[in-house]
Length: 111
Image (cartoon, rainbow, N blue to C red; front, top):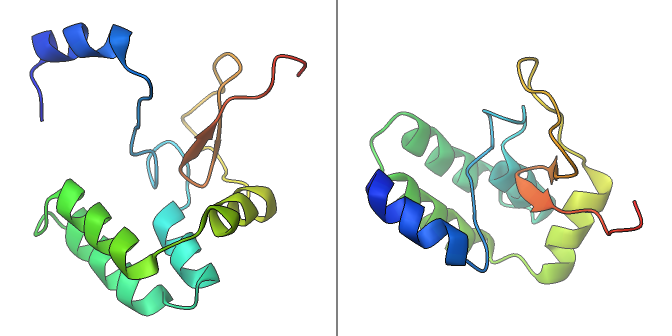
């Protein structure tokens, strides 16, 4: 993790920013949904539980799950299209940013 001051320097120049919103901002656990679509739900779910329990660092768990799942761009696109995420009860939409199962999508300017 980076310090707050480092983050303030990095954030404005970043090409992309990634947040872990699964089971916090949205109710779903996106990597588990993707694993289910790819037919390997049980192994990925076990890794998710270890990470959520704190026994495995987030970065390690995410890297291991994605290496196990090996999703194609088409599978991720299908997940986004077929299984929209649902905001948790305490989160309200802000601006034009939307989440689908942990994947951030910015609508086109014509939205």
